[in-house]
Image 1 (cartoon, one colour):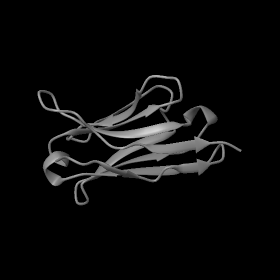
Image 2 (cartoon, helix red, strand yellow):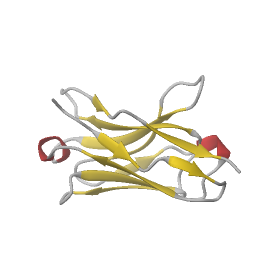
Image 3 (cartoon, rainbow, N blue to C red):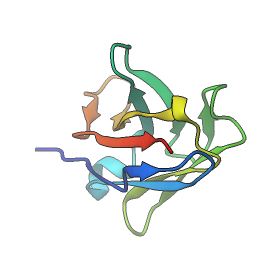
Image 4 (cartoon, rainbow, N blue to C red):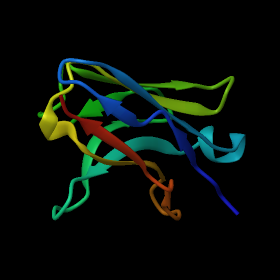
Length: 116
């Protein structure tokens, strides 16, 4: 059974930073694209950032210049560094592993709350 284990969420003040982590198996990590999505209350889940297994990253316009996605092949972990956080970044953040023609996998979600 594929597992994506997330950590790093929490409460932070506007302008602050958090780093989310998502660990999975080497089998998945080595060939899948890894991404972060978020879902705010009453809204649909949307893509925040994605990084291909070759290391190419793409971001939602709303987080460009503030968030950075990266992957550590030694630890089979993908990170989302979030800086200059805003209240509108408040959401449950989900780690995602996807590959064309294969199943898509999701983490359990981690809450990020940006509030003073």
